[in-house]
Length: 241
Image 1 (spheres, one colour):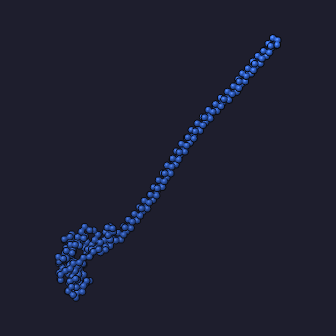
Image 2 (cartoon, rainbow, N blue to C red):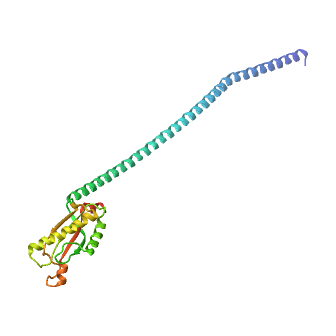
């Protein structure tokens, strides 16, 4: 190969190599120019995505917190409503109880008013007298002492005292004698036991209402008597129930 040809060949190879290298450099530069903006955009989008994700998480967290707060308040309202309902039921029951008590009080009051002058006998006692006498025997006084002890410090009672005789003597005389016997009982109870006079009522009935036959001595002794009946007011009886 001639030196001229050889030189031309070397020159051609050198130029081709330079062109290749220049082309490769140009290609890399081009690629870099194209890729860098895309890569930057991708990074930007990634950052935006992260921010959006964080924002979504924040919104979701606040939403959950809000939901829980609303739910708690709703539960509180439900509890208050339930409490109010319970109090309303209790108030209604209290009102019913009050009405019932008022009804009971009114009923008791009306009953007391109707029974204000109503008395019922609760005990009877009797004392006997000697023939043609109105003074009390020791046995009669003992009986009256026992009766007085039962009514001591009591209220709402009266004593009904009725005197009787046997059939010996005139009717007028026996009426007077039976009255004196009743007065003897009243005087003893008032003087010795301080029983108020307004609680004692006396009546002489003479020879009426005999408990035994006046034809016999035993019967006449039984008829010479004073009967004492202890009566209690219906109001007092109701108050002790």
